[in-house]
Image (cartoon, rainbow, N blue to C red; front, side, top):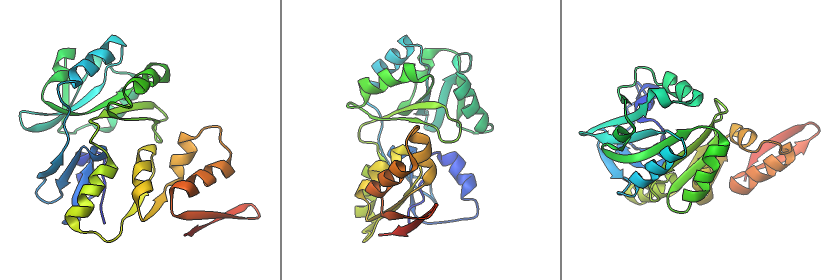
Length: 239
């Protein structure tokens, strides 16, 4: 079993008291870490091209939260005065996080070994950037299922949950892969799994305007479950 946590600091609280000696996939596959020693087993950093991406974001009035290792410590950096409402909500949920690194100048967002960029802003600002970079980097463009804010996440092309799972499956010599997920960025894992069980919140939030029937059909196409209608109820069964 692989316990996948997006934010390693938050994840430590979620797993308090559980000393599972298994690797953790974090930041959508940017890193794989040892859960006990916290040693990085697999790392995917941006190359120097990330600086031009940041400049492009700035020129479009998009001011991201940038994740990097700075002087050997994991930090997420941001300019408070330039934060959107969605960013403020996110940062409030991370109050007390030892990774917090509030900076004054945009140039400081370029410091360290950068591995993850999070933009939380208006769709009309983020969608063109997603279209521009989706083939060059691993990009996730989706509405956050908890806040309904629009996110654009940009990572190195090699950083993905599915790629990390491929590497771990070989490392651990796993015979079977079962994936649980609740987000659009989990689809690549569903497609490579022996069995996959998607969360219903994912489809309702990321397919606005769709009918219930079309959503369930979509879930069936990417997972290992079937939905059978009986009266007004849908029965879920594993294939």
